[in-house]
Image: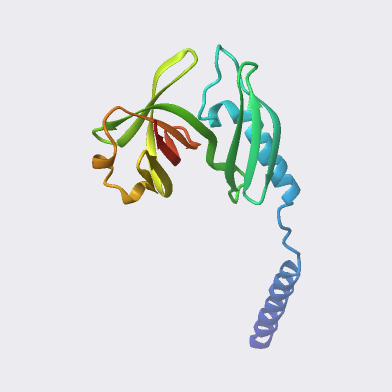
Length: 189
């Protein structure tokens, strides 16, 4: 009886080992990068109105006219029949295959006034056709250049409260996301 039990245990162990070996030999396929890129392109096309920091105008709806994506970043040109915009974005794809847009921005170049906001720092007041008194938060980085009549300096090197005057007329160049402009340059006018 003891020999039979031992023999059955050995056979069961060999069967499990054989199954484990066969399963371990099945190649694990990586997701096809072409399929992932197609998923990213389709996601941006379907969601461009929500992704754009600039809203469509006069009741229009954005549609994509050109798009490219690879290696986690992309560019897109889109319009609504009234305005045409270009944006850049970065993305990831989670383990379930869902596209996640991590950042979407458009170039920003406008003239207006800067004002101190009590909670957020400096804001930029500007106008667009049909949209007066727009306000957006300014984000200064270690690359932001401030150009004053007396010279040019890195914006972060300034004591901004002393350097900027409430209502100062400036030109801003940078990149816009939904709620902020990352300033490349601020020029006193």
